[in-house]
Length: 398
Length: 116
Image 1 (tube, rainbow over the protein chains, first blue to last red):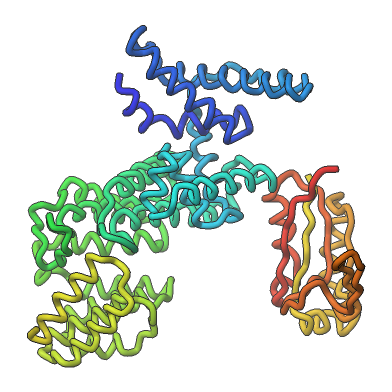
Image 2 (tube, each protein chain N blue to C red; image 1 turned 120 degrees about the vertical axis):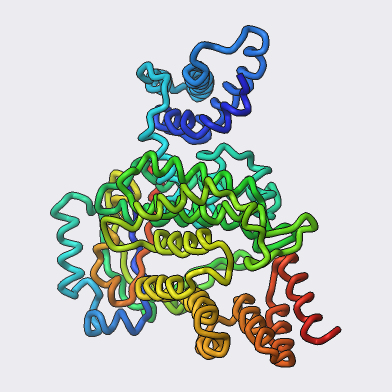
């Protein structure tokens, strides 16, 4: 019995139910931590229990009751002891996992707090891991978590799944958190590495859990499809030296074709039965890339059309840029440049980078150099910077 | 538990809202407040006169200083409050979201009240 594996799979579920029973996140976390510690100590000696999850839940509850008794005796409040005797429950309830996710992603919490709390309580990541993943000092991340839990307690954010009226809006926030975690892992915004695989895996796990808990929600499937289709290509985006490999140079045989197949099947289901959502549409675009044997054989017209639909529902200059690139591939780079020049997106390095690329392909090297320099002035990721520098050298013959 | 709903808006919005009178005289706002009284949520409420009528008291080197005007010169000023008894934050948010003047550029801050 691998306790580490058990922790990865079940920590969030057990914690979610403990929180409902104990009505206190920190108490539940501490109790569960002690229970896992006890498991690590006792199971190698006595052998693992028949039902390890039940054992952990029961042990955690007892540790929590001990804690409450100690506090109550210290403060002279005997009523608290009675309140702690919860009904005999030793299996996590799936609904509790949903409660926990929605609570962590409550709009009253800041986006950074939502992400941190979700990774800590639902995914069971240690504070140090989360801090490292988001390039934030450990005490800062610890403080973020403390404040978030304090807000939940003091402002009384309820431990509930939102009602039908609010569900769609609240789900948007949850999906945004999952997407943010995945993107952080997929393409780091700051620092050395392009890819942090562990965050991608956590996001995928979380998304799968959401599909299981909310089977009727099409956008959850849409997001899972998008994550799978992106994750399928992750291994080929960066070479062994950490340098970027463009789509046209990626070894498609090394794409994860099982994930692609699963993603494509999900895209179908995500798009059926109603107007397409933002993730379903993005997944459909990713599917077109994933299905194509090469860049040249990709259905760029269809991709451009899908970006058009996406723009219709979610106007955004970044989507306009993506559409301009797709149209450039379908109709020619001059057309692409015309479209890009109409987009206002000042702090986004991919815009001048895209212009530079099109100018380069058209042989307009002097103009391309200018655009590469503009991109270099605002790029933040080291691998992307190195890539742009190489391109700049190419077009300046340097 | 109780929450204080603090209404903020630019000075000119307050005068526009009620033609220069105290803000709660506007029909939509009044209906919102009356509904909270009727439902039993409301514990206290008031509209405040403009910041031009404010006086601020501070202490400096043992002396009490009295100055004309609000505590801080801000673009958006406090103009009124409502204290409501709610089950949880979501209920307070739902009540605040129904405040009609939100659609006219006002904001509402929700703060949990410390139990006595």
